[in-house]
Length: 367
Image (cartoon, rainbow, N blue to C red):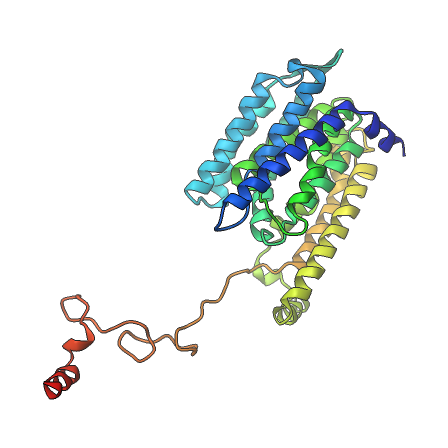
């Protein structure tokens, strides 16, 4: 109840709600304008930019240093470049590392209202290291759950966990206020998604706010990052090698293939339930530790359990089977009936049907 009272009295939360509604309206207009996908990919950029704008509107320009803006821009550019050239996760992570480095060295001291906040170097380093990994995980999670838009409810729960875990609630209230209206981008139909650049910028914003809000209690930073829950655990779970999959998992996957609607519904409910449990555990138990080391040791059992649960619920392979032409599983050679391809001559040029001997005989008979 005390947290809700603080949230209601926060001017940053009110400004965040207003700017979050603007993000929703902009995303809806762009989604309707896109006739192909009917989805807008600016949600991640919008949440990050609106959060910084809400902080500046409430506390002034000194609350968001220029170095933080440059770091978030570098993260966004790295994610955009990785998406443009379709890079694998390892190379994408390399492109995001410079932005994380800039986030770690930016703004050791900043002014929030009348308070001078000095962020310890260890907290800034952890936030800088976590930002690229979190950005990569959010983008991967959104790619898998793009049809349901599950990433946005997960982000709302993660921002709520950050608000509960951090001792300083002003900045985290702005982030929570911006994220709450974005739930309208999911109901009744997903209208927005978070691509690579938006995910990286949003992850940098989240990690920076967690670092600043946890400057008095470094263990709260670990709790805030642990509140990301399945946004990080599920991408890790999908990278568990295939030999570790149990026979029970294979049986579950075989049953779910025949009932895709039930499977989506079960995955949605279990994902939200697991996220809520992880947010409460991280914000109440993990964040109560004073040191980051002890908080990490307390977080690891819960994170490992969540990874195993995510591995049990979501199959590793999501490849789509391509249907063969003609309805049979055997691939047909060019020139066979139903193959969809005509024969080619020895020179490599395609021969028309009328160049065959049988066709020539038919043409002579017609004449």
